[in-house]
Image (tube, rainbow, N blue to C red; front, side):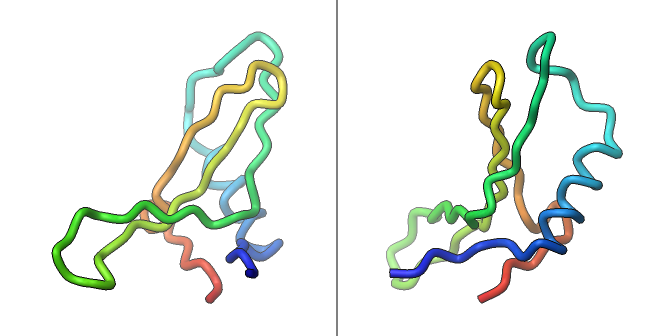
Length: 80
């Protein structure tokens, strides 16, 4: 089974977009890494396949705080 991943260009674009916004620091030594895997959050639905959201996950390598962002809100369309 292959997982869907963001391309290197998309990861660079995600990093630029996240760094351009004034986001609060999670700790005194913030070291944020972007997970290259595309995460999918299914919406509860009585039809299959149901709707879903594609997500970007970041994690601080120092304190472990993880955050998720909608790929759509970052104007990123994951590669299929």
